[in-house]
Image 1: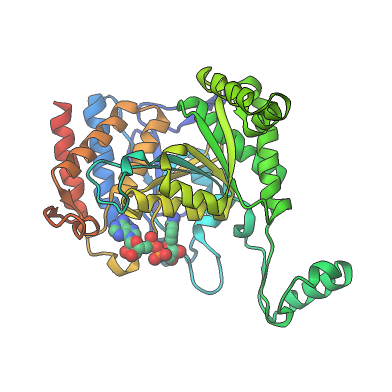
Image 2: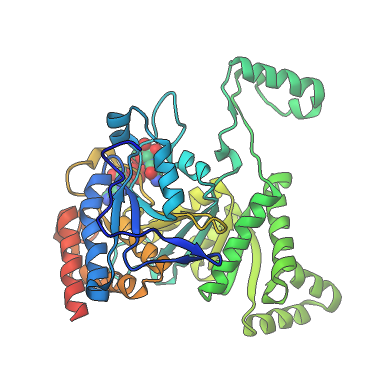
Length: 437
Ligand code: NAI
């Protein structure tokens, strides 16, 4: 074991699995990566908020026993590697952790540390809830209608990183092979000599496990609808297949607990529109989850113009990446959007701020820490420590109500009081103490 990191607050115990469920001790060891860039800034604000919420909710009976893991610039300086294998092992062993943003190294080495971490731990689901906190400045007229959860597949798609650089040996070999074996496909490459090539793998297993996780989440959290987002009209055997596999999985594994658009279509074919609509209303009234689909571009338009029609969005890697940022803009931007990467089977979960390292404002104590605080709040819910999580929710709301904001919100709330990253965290704690009294 490399020295320097990996020491946790004394008295901590490991979270384990019992009967497939998390068994959380009163003093769980929680591994964390501080992150690069503004990672340091937002962690200084977020950690005290998380600690205080637990202290206030459970007195001295519970404690988060933090254990720092090296990654990114810090790991490079100390261990000459951006992502030590021990960091990956520690997340796997302790099951639940949290991280700040990591710089994507330019040039050789990792394509992205985040992608590498997700791949190494097979964290195939990225969950990003998008909900407006009243008072947060945002660009849409009715942000109260935005209450969605993005379920993004994390391990496949064009994001898997299979690419052949323009002009490279591998690119030429690939094109030669394609020309010989699939001349009609090769003819679709408009400018072969000057093309980079990317490959987009989408599997049945990958699609099914993502949709399964989304349905389980909907059941657990009383969510009534899931929309499968895809561009299957064009990419039939990848995005189209994702949708077909998703529907088939829902009907096969969840039977009468879901009602799908495919079933509605079948019912319409047999009995007409009125009958089909009647079946759907009955299903929804009976508490079944309504599963439909939408073409990506139409979904971008409708999530903006009719957000109340969407609940959970289940989609592939690239679509999910684009949707999470676009939707977070509707409720105030990256500074306030939380997330988690997880594996429903191994139960390894890493909660993380959605934003990147924001190098232009790093180290200036001015970044908005809400994204990391709210990711920590999601983590507390995940541990079953709901009282602490609810305290955080309420006190962030009170902090916003008191018009105490970091610089990113100030330009849209000129009457507000500007505070630093750490002062924002302190304001949240002050409100938390008042709420807990
Ligand atoms: P970014 O999220 O770092 O910044 C985008 C914009 O949002 C910038 O204007 C930035 O100042 C602002 N911003 C971000 N977080 C903020 C906060 N908490 N408070 C106030 N303003 C905030 O995205 P960018 O510039 O594309 O990427 C910078 C680096 O971060 C890259 O190396 C990228 O690969 C990495 N990155 C890492 C992620 C992760 O670790 N999960 C996610 C996204 C990017």
